Image (cartoon, rainbow, N blue to C red; front, side, top):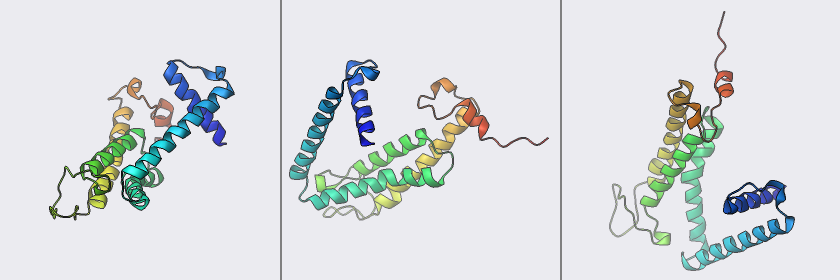
Length: 183
């Protein structure tokens, strides 16, 4: 099954580079070549980052889990438990969570905080629970607000369907989810 996804990635990558749809014209040899180069590049970058950026692999693991908590956890919760969340909200929450997390600084990679929250000492790191109270919660609220706002704008036809570039809202989907009218 992973070959299908790898081939899709490869076809899309080469089609983007060539700026045209290549469909079935791509030989299997070219697919394997692109996959091998991609794995080599990503592996080299990960190794360089592990050797030069942080003091230990554990600190990179902690940073990665922090980013997953701040950026991806709100999306998972919204998709699972909040009805009518969509791509617009997910993208807005992703960007907001990532920007807030980057601006809060990270001592593991030497990123100084731009935003200094209450209880910020000059000697230590942020003491305010910014990951939970700000970055993750703001991302969660942003996903919900933007999702419902975009649904309202497209449903009331304030924005035309031609502006729905990720195709989240189709006429059928909006009509199908409305409550049936009683006679």
